[in-house]
Length: 159
Image 1 (cartoon, rainbow, N blue to C red):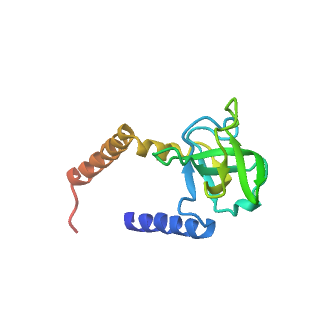
Image 2: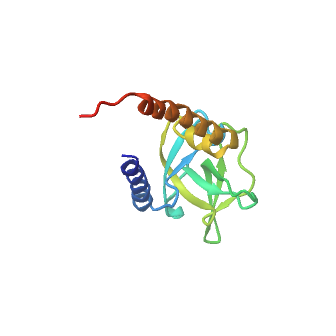
Image 3: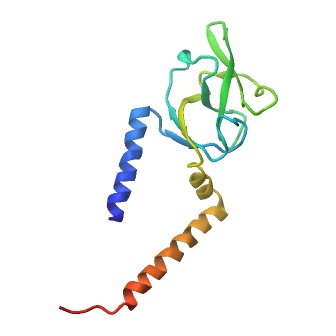
């Protein structure tokens, strides 16, 4: 049964990657910069997009080239400029007081947000934190050990 569940989850992940055209079709929101539209812990569904089709108001995922951690940023496009045939995007978190520093180029943009699931991303955030991963392992053990002990200690009738 566990193998079937694992294959189903893995297969769904591969299917989403192919359908949405991105290696990371699901991302957890890590900050409150997009509140009240997206909250920390929301799971966003993203699709690969041709940057030339983006419009004002679209929420995008981009990489900040100056960030060595390469953490994807989820912010809204508030301005688009065409400079010498090259598109540049000004972005801003809805909950931030001002726009992000610098302009995004078409190369910076990874995907466009097409939907979200409230709080489901907390599982991912929990797994990424060292204390969260340990907590999940302990939780699994706390449920698994008593179940195995009950099966082992329960007398079985032989037919």
